[in-house]
Image (cartoon, rainbow, N blue to C red; front, side, top):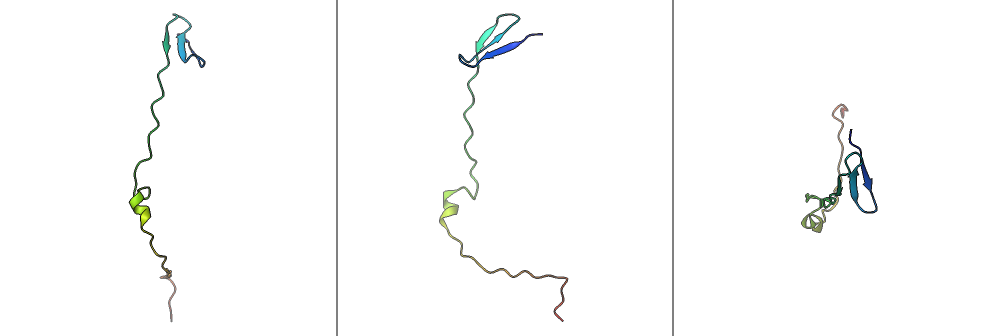
Length: 63
């Protein structure tokens, strides 16, 4: 079984059994935030006024 070791200082990885060596691949760029209706600048521009909400219990009768 091959054993691979990584040298964090030089970013090299090496196989202990066969002396194969290569540079570690670069990390992919981090993805940017996905645009949603909340994160869009246009959605944040409009300030919706607060409204009173009345909750009604359908089991309660008003007799």
